[in-house]
Length: 253
Image 1: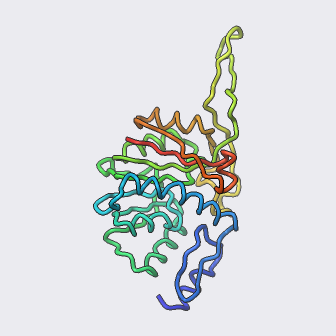
Image 2 (image 1 turned 135 degrees about the vertical axis):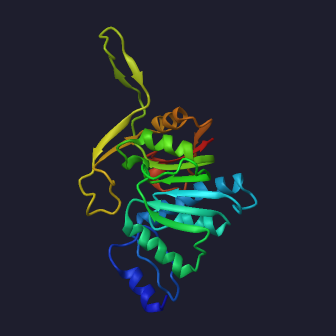
Image 3 (image 1 turned 180 degrees about the vertical axis):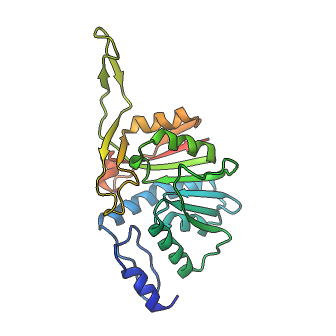
């Protein structure tokens, strides 16, 4: 790809979700400045986990990057030797991922991107050593259905990053009895995203169910994952993670 083509790729609106160095001083502009800090926090939380599970790299491992956006983490997995499939519901994101792949010259036999709704066309015979599910759970109308699909596809480890509600105290319900109170520690907030056509970060559907941390752990364990835990952010992490407004969870098959 020529310098002029790379410059046009980087500068064509809208701004990018991830920052890519396309060479010759051409860098993709971020949608917001906070994204740089969020991605740095994500990397610091996720990369050590992958390196602990696969200390010799990912050669011979199959990985699925769900809601891969422009392919940033797909490229990370590929660079460590994995065979990677990145999927996203938005064709615009996939076109950008493929364009960056061409710039970097990454082998299409080990790295593929496709426009795909996660709930459809998932081959049940396909299984992945590692699945990434970053920044999607809280955009979904059916989060439990998504988690069940993740469980079927994952052979070893699933990494989930999601926005969280701040609800920590149990919600109470009479549950059909005025004389009895049922405490519900796992809860979800319902949000209607009305800007899905204008905002590239909005939900693919209009309704989103945003879980609290207890709900994420409950969803994953109920789907069948044998061990689920949340990564504790370091003190220099983005404030959203320190406030528990966002979280990274690991689910072991």
